[in-house]
Image 1 (cartoon, helix red, strand yellow):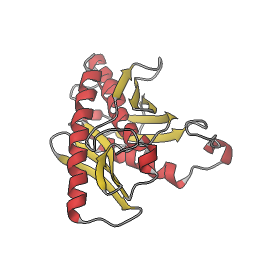
Image 2 (cartoon, helix red, strand yellow; image 1 turned 60 degrees about the horizontal axis):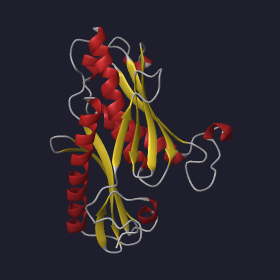
Image 3 (tube, one colour; image 1 turned 30 degrees about the vertical axis):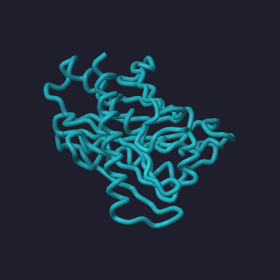
Image 4 (cartoon, helix red, strand yellow; image 1 turned 180 degrees about the horizontal axis):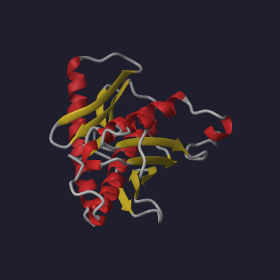
Length: 238
């Protein structure tokens, strides 16, 4: 039995509230159960120096966790004067995941930054960030198209992410904190609508697992991402 009482292939409730902030070109508050992440997309008419003159844009991501997003207060990384290795790793993952579904030439010479700020953490913050960042990106790009700033849609597909793991010997979908902290193995999958894999991060924590277990986790991830794709579609069509 899972601590939450969910079935092995059962997701937590997903909600996506768009237009959550006033000033960002695209924004949403995404919730996976008790995990809540504010995702905003900011469009800037500039690009990194190494892209100048190439006629293409850039998509990047930043990630942070508010001091009281967890059971105890964590110190702000700005106060420490440096980002943790975990934060840097997640930021790179968010950027790679979104760039996997963007045609940068169609975006033009501009940069879109996806900021993912964890308000409350209960497992799966990086996967919720990626799934919500796509919604914020979609809304921001819709604004560019509507204004006439670009004429072709640079977003090629939806991208979503979900965590899976082996908990007490059973592969399960969408780990919450009690499961994530006690799983024998956990994996984060970033999937593109249509059946492609953007990234897979899989780790044996308490015990190694075999190929069949990995494939079962992948199949669970595909089921979960199908639900996320549906939620993303509904959120961006409102």
